[in-house]
Length: 370
Image (cartoon, rainbow, N blue to C red):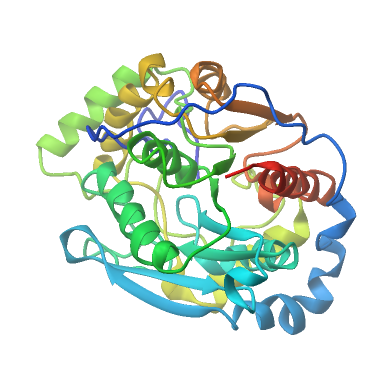
């Protein structure tokens, strides 16, 4: 996904911020950070990118296909698909359940390697495909356009998934693992439903849009004008359909420096063209910015009281780290881990980054008490 350039005001990747006016009883966790710096599991306990080319089919995809596929009806009658990977024996053997929320454009299958690693650490995984992308139903006629009517729809879908699917069985503990847009959705969900999960690990959450040299308010006003004139379903400038010819060395690959994991991602999209999604629409961008104004307020962050481990990418060009800093500084139970050499997709990065992030997330989950 592309950044906004100085000449293309609206050619940006928009971050996702969902506004909901829900108010529920909150919890008061300790502000003392949990030590995730060392101990089991270790980075070496997770799958290596060097093995992807040899065991992707026999190991990664084979495990992915054991997942139980399902769907439910989301806001406005949109079909939301999901996949469940339960530990054998149910709650008697699992350490807990992890609700996995991918980023924009990402199908569940892109996380096949991550899902297997989480299962090997004793966790059941409940992965959801957001409306309008991945395995779920598209919202408008052009399946390549990233579109949403309201970011609150993402949060409402997530609430249904958490209640009716993740919550259908009893679990020792429940956690969220979310990336990018999924992280923005998770933050808003936790704001509105503070007692549902024991903790969350957020990878480069979209809490601020990188709009280049253009202020967000300029981008917002221009996108609002395009929505008002009936162009809400159109691509913003610089965006278009999915590029099947994207190469690892292309400038547009600004999300990972793991060639093996980049290749695995492209294979998912090329093997399953129906999963492909292109750039964002004017309405998607507009709704993202509109909700972002709310999410960036310290008063909002102070009401997100669930334990959060926030992973920040030092080389992130898609979301703004200063927004993450402000949120984590204001949220009463947020702690931050920075990967200075990482690009946006921390969970799809080189082993030295990706596996250390997963190890820290599992240490965090293992140490949290219900």
